[in-house]
Length: 432
Image (tube, rainbow, N blue to C red; front, side):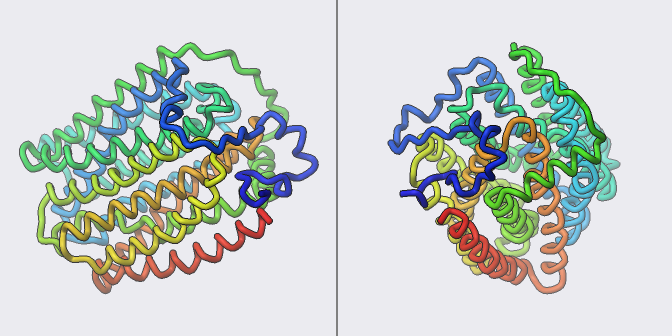
């Protein structure tokens, strides 16, 4: 049936038909575990996959340890929000320009520079912590520069996938990207909890710095096909304007960006509070914090593998709808839970719902956008993650300080449910 198509013809403007002939979406309704790792047949993607999984493992170790360290330094949930907000400021300022850069310069070069900056920041934080001079403001400043690196890294990384795999493998590659991200999220925080408890946070930061060597080496070793040089005929502002105009002209892209913005602002900002939750609500320690972070990653990992096996199934539209509604529901019950096993169960459910929405939304957008707009459109899409989540972190940190951690989570879950339901109805009308 037409409404079961992932990309229906009625959302494509007539003047985009020629551009989108190269973005045809191959419908395959069969579920097959054999298809789970099909993108790994491409040598460049294999290098990317293994390099990224090493780097992301370190990133999650640092993220987990950094959150607990700043809570130990300040004993304030609001400071957890300040770190997230500081990381988001440069994203708000430079992410869209990062999309133009991703369309103008070799994307591999952009990613290597960004990853090198991230590695340097990890080593700086490790040195500050080893020497026992680290303060809360140090972490906030370093978070700002990490956000600056992400502003250029994220659009280039999103647009880089089609240089690594054939278009027919794009959905599988997106799902495997999520698999490696969530494998690291499932294992990294738990490892960080153990390392933090046994050796201190500095070792988490040094291991993260070393982990970037893997992805940088992988990028250097890739043998990429020459990409056609794009003639720069307009100014940066004009190219940004073109990217916004195209994104707003496509109803489905517009709806997906609105959905991801809503979830990042209200639906996942609770992650900021997990260090405080582990101590204040569950009366735990750094290990408890790590286990809670890993529970979300475990649920997300299972779902990412499932989506990779699903390919471009006709059930994708139904699955994203399930994710839209189950995410705020799991968040609501997490807000009520004050017993570790129940909290972990709700976090697993939250991870499942989150990946259903994020992966499938990403696949929809990537299959609509033509290549010459890919960097700019993906910068707008990425902005909703890196720009809106820090705002959500600041907001939920304030609510937790003003009321309590559970109250803040419940408030955000209700807002997410209402707004997501409205957007889901909007998406359904686009398909009909």
